Length: 354
Image 1 (tube, rainbow, N blue to C red):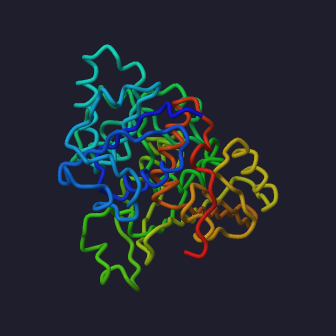
Image 2: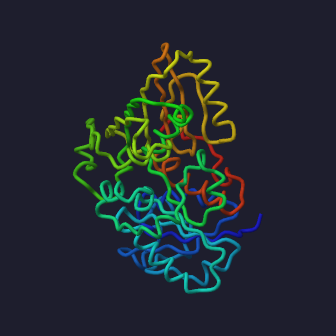
């Protein structure tokens, strides 16, 4: 397999970029040809991400992308790992600049932030008030959860990557959502790396260690994203009750979803419904026992199990927030857009023990 995909990463210093770079060391068709940062220009990658010492040693962190090098491949992919409020604007500027060139027919972009996920502008302004609306640009971005929109992603040139908590909640619920009316309770727990690399009081080790706390109850920005992905962005059919909680772990998401179906169902029948729904999704595993974080952390897998009592249903999903919740899904999207097998560079088991 030739290296026919060139990748440049905006915002090279965060956890998302570090995880992209780690995973891409094993991708047989990708060459990373650009890394940008506003704060670490000229630094070696090993100084910023010590676990990557010995890799990408000839690739400096720069202020701008070398477009000639990026575009000198069959496929050129820009992945923005910039934070919310900055990423969308940076991609808009980049696409405006590249739009004046004639040699960009091979360009794709993937945004890891929430800046371009929500299609409804009023919801975007409510949940991402610090992010520019970019109404015309927003229409160009396809929501990038492969298990729900694989064909659209294959045809896309611009992807809005899903949020990590949203990914777990959506994957847990999607097989039941088409004809569901009523309340769905999303009880989600996340590791500290989901808050990013920059030190914050809520993620400072003495605050996080041996602690457990909920945040943004009924006001989390992933709630409208979940409803949008489930086909009910206005909440006409589904009343979402979403709460996120910080757990004492660096990585991982555990979502427990509660709902009541119109008719009674048993575990076996519901499990088969989930297996049929995800039959073509190699990274979703339907398991019989409740999923465990140790079985997914370090991998691109999402493990899902169900429990039923007549009409009452609980669905549990576990995934790694930095991989299936971010960088791994971005690489899935890259693979689909570039005509590669979806599992390329990602087919590896979890770390156990963690």
